[in-house]
Amino acid sequence: MPSVAMRPYLAIARISWRSALAYRIPFVLSLCMMVFNLLAMLSLWRVLLASGHPLAGFTWPEMRAYLLVSFVTGCLVSSFTDFTMAFRIQSGLVALDLTQPVHYQRARFAQCLGMTVLESATAAVVCGAALAAFGAIPVPALPQLALFLVSLVAVVPLKFLIVYSSGLLCFWTHNYLGVSFARAAVSAVLSGALVPLVFFPGWLRILAEVLPFQGIASTPALIYLGQASGWDAVRLIGIQLLWIAVLWAGASAAWNAALRRLTIHGG
Image (tube, rainbow, N blue to C red; front, top):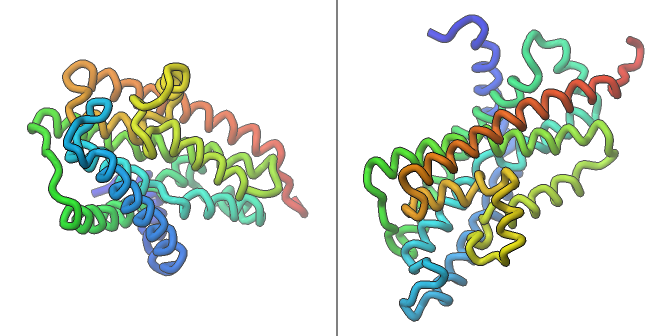
């Protein structure tokens, strides 16, 4: 049985995925865009690796696995999460959120987790179709698979905090669309979702490894492939967890600063 303190957050999580089902068209359109990107990337890399020779250490089956893991992490914490939050801030509905007896940041995270249930199920179906069309991928041994699952779980709070932090900028900006597109573009590149970090020039790879974005796609993908194993995999997971702690504290500070800018007419 969930504790009394947890019940409001569980209710928020349930409402979240039900809301996504109510607004099916935006969710489906967003998913279709990601599926098109996945198919395009798979087709491109199949041509590049058609000779059978590895490219920067990647064979075609390994690149398929890398791209599918990147697709799954890309599905998690979709644009539905940040645009819902941005709309409520810009429209002033955030004032109603402040009247609820819940912690705002935790409530948004619960909302994100509710969406993750639907996003994970959808990603699994798409990956199954991609495997049928492009062939199977290597499956790691059980210990390596366990490390991968830990890393994959860590993606959700890490990506949420990046999205949530960008959403808070609505308190200082009049339009969120540009912020969202910029954040998505930077995240796609520096996370290694579009191209593995090993293909980056030295200075850009160092920058990507310093920032938290690699924990979104590159880290779980490399662990799945076994290119990061043992203590190296543990180190990468530790970096994910460290960034989660840092970004949670930073987002809390940003929220407190945003509250000082919030003006509610009549009160």
